[in-house]
Image 1 (tube, rainbow, N blue to C red):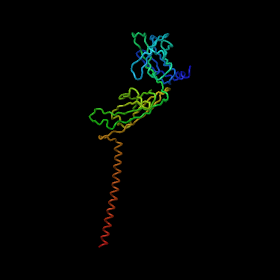
Image 2: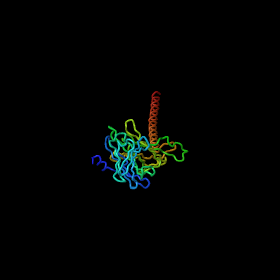
Image 3: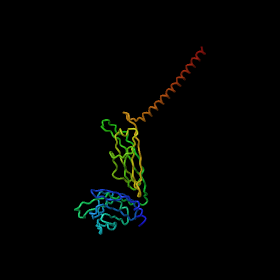
Image 4: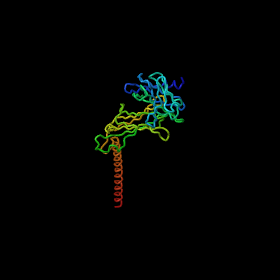
Length: 304
C-alpha cells in the first residue's frame, strides 16, 4: 500500500447519509494533487441492492452524469469514462470509484448509488456524495479570514413594522479550495432561523474564494446588552476541518432618534466638558473686565 493510500485510510472519516431504509457511508470531502490516483470508497447496508452506480456532478452544472455501474463481478462504463475511471467491488455492499490520473476536469461531486437492477424499474438509493477538488498548481491550501459586519444604521427606521429586524453579515474570504460550511451561534447555542448563506463560494480575481452568510434577528435581540452572536466557518484542508470564527456583542437599547446609550453617554460627557470650559472662560473674561474697570477708575482718580 502506497504512503498516500495509507494516509487516506488513517485519516478516513466516514460520512453517513440515510436514504429511506438504506444507510450509505461515503467520505464527504477529498482534496488531492494533480496526476494522483484517487480512490473514492462507498458502502451501504442492504445486500439485496446488487447494482452499484457512480455519478458525477460538475460544480457548474446541477445535472448528474452516469459514469458507470456494475455487479460484484462485472463493470460497465458510459461513453469514454472507462479511459479515466475504474469501478471496483469488494462485496455486494462495498465498492470504490478510482480516478486513474486526476486533473482539473475531475474536480466535482461523486455520488454512489445502489439498486436491484440497472433497468430503471427499481428505485435507486443515493449516498451523500464526495466533493473532490484537484488542487491547481501553485495555489496553496489556505484557510479563510472571517469578519462580521454590524447592521446598517438605516435598518429598521420604519416604526410601523410589527417585528423589526437587524441583519448581521458574515464574510469568509481568502480561502482555497472551497470546502467550507458556515454556521451561527447566539450565546453559545446554534442558530438556524433567519440564516441565509450563499449556495456556493464565489471565486475571486486572486483565485481564492469568498462566501457570505446573513443572520436576521429581532432588533430587541440585537439591542439587548450581553447577547453575543458568532459566525463559525468550518474549512476542510485535506486532512481535517479547521474552524475560524468572528463574533459581535449586542449594545443596549436605542433612543427614538436611533442613538445608543453608549453614544448618548459619550455626548453627555462631551457636553459637560464643553460647559465646564465655557464657565472657566466666562470667569476669566469677567475677571479681565473687572480688572479693566478698576484700572479706568484708578486713572480717573489720579487725573482728578
